[in-house]
Every structure is written in structure tokens, then in C-alpha cells.
Length: 339
Image (cartoon, rainbow, N blue to C red; front, side):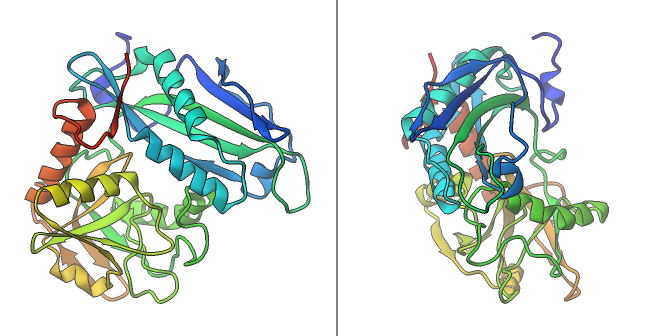
């Protein structure tokens, strides 16, 4: 793979050798099948195309300096996909099937795992879709689970550097009792107009407020929000927030560093009390926030005035990355090491 400039990869798609597929028919899942084609043969009336029966996951594999490949928190992704599938009445892939397909996809595309210290990783995308042809609004009877991988660079082109975010009160990401807690494509489609507007204005992302009252912090578009103050890690609790596996990991690390953890409703005014703030997720790990502009209220919340992340963000980021790459022990059982 000498032709790939590993250190300059974008967060985009690159063709790899194989993907893995399993079909749900007559109440059972098929044995995983290796496939070289990047395309699906899909009926035009499939429920995923018309009624949004589609859920997915995002996870990563990393090359350690010992030459071994490590997959991060695979079981948690399997369980979250099951939760998402339940949320929109899809067949739930068994955890063992999910894990087998992920491991197979990584092993069969091992030559695409970026080298240690390149700043890149192998992104893993499990995708579950309803494939039954029908025009009535009801759950599909047949499903396809597909796992593909692609090498990626940093999600934000700035990498691990503070970026500005904006509150756009005229947009909502997800309804309080809707699909916000599930990883479905519709949540991301709903965020596209606000995200594009934010990017045109020079911001890296949107900080959404709760859709019901516009009083509490919700999510940073495709990532969870957290704030740091008084040796406390504070992150919002809401029925419309996707339970981020990265956020869960950071809370564990912060707790073990002697910090207090508060997962609760966070009023927007509380932004003025945070010493540091960040967005976290699989793609970016941590994206430190330099400032948040609340345009409707004509307020700006500043967390850092230079290009340096705060000390807690920096410590958490490097600790998590060290575990992911195998540079530090994994006392939590988060890592699956491939032979």
C-alpha cells in the first residue's frame, strides 16, 4: 500500500478489498458472506428507501507499534445497533454475528489499516437496512447487514485543535421522544441544513438545544457535548441524544483520574461556567471547542483563546488514544486484539 499517503488521508471513502454481508430471511440470519462488489442489488420499493428502516454504526481499528490490529469497543457497537434496530422495528443482528462480521471485514482488509503514528485509522461501518419490497407503511420482513471498512484521517481537518461552534435556535436535530437516541440516518439528514449553514459561516459544527424548550444543551451535530469545571466532567442527559461510546469511555477515564461525573440536563447559560468544552465521538474522538456563539441571544462563550486544547481535554484525548493503539494497558476490556 505504498501508494497511499497515510498521513494526509481525509475522512472520506476509499475502496477496499472486501465487505461482509448477512441476510435476514424467514426469521433467521444467513452465514456471513464475503463480497468484493461495493454495490447493492436493491428493490426500488425496499423499506429502507421509503420509510427510513436503516440503522448504522461507526467504530475504528488501530495498528499498534507491535504490529497488531486493535478494534475498539466492538461489543458496545453491537449492543447499540440492537437498540437502534428495536427503536424502529428492525430485526436485531445477534452480537456474535455482528462481531464475527466486523472481525472478518478488518482481517480481510488488513492491508488498509493505516500504520502506527500515521494519525489515521481504519473506520468500520456496519449498516443494517430493510430490503422488503412494499408500499404500505410497516416493518420489513427481510434485512441486510453489511460491514465495510475504509481508512480515514481526522474527522475535522484541523485535527485535535479547538474550533468554534454555533447555536442555531431555528433548527432542531431530533424530537424529544423521537429517534434521537438511535443511530438512524434520518437524524443526520435532519441536521444537514444547520450544519451546512454553520460551515458557510466559518464554524466546525452546530450545538443543538433541546427541541421542546430550547433551554438545554442537546448534541453537537454528529457528536456528544461535554464541559469541564471544578474537576467535574459534565455531559447532557436527554431522550434525544445518541449514547456515544466515546463519551462513555471518556466518563470512565475521567472518573479514574479522580474527576466527578455529572450526566444531567445542562442549561445553555451554564456554558459560561465551563473551563473547557468539547465534542466527542468515534470519528473525531475529542474535538475541543474554542468558543460557542449563540447568535439569537447575541452571546459568546469562550473556552480558549489560542490553538491549544485545555489540559483536561488533552489528558483525556491522549489517554484514550493510548489505549486504542495499545500504548497503555486496557484494564476495561475495551480492546479486541486480532492475531
